[in-house]
Length: 162
Image (cartoon, rainbow, N blue to C red):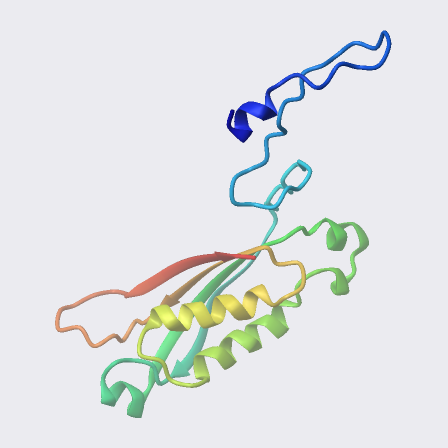
């Protein structure tokens, strides 16, 4: 018999008067180490939102964009549990959005990148380093993008979680 078939065979007779039982294999998720089941932690629904952060950066694929620079506008939405701050009125129990705004501006003013997608990723990683932030949505606007037709805005939005 195969080993799988052997796993379903009854165990040897139990000693004097004890009932015999069939041993069945324990199901274990394939490809993952066994861990006891636990309920997933619900994603927080509380938000801290910064909209319209403006900074000059030198991002773009064209040389003139990198030389002259242009204004970028960034919106961030952080998802985190605000209950500790809202019940204690303690700034230390939430994200200091003044500090975060300065960090986002520093990201925009930092090392030039070709794509606003890469800039949005940089900003998202900065946001996720803030204590308690579980998820972030970042939109980077490039209102002066070098496009040959009239437009109002060009933007990318990405969402990242930890």
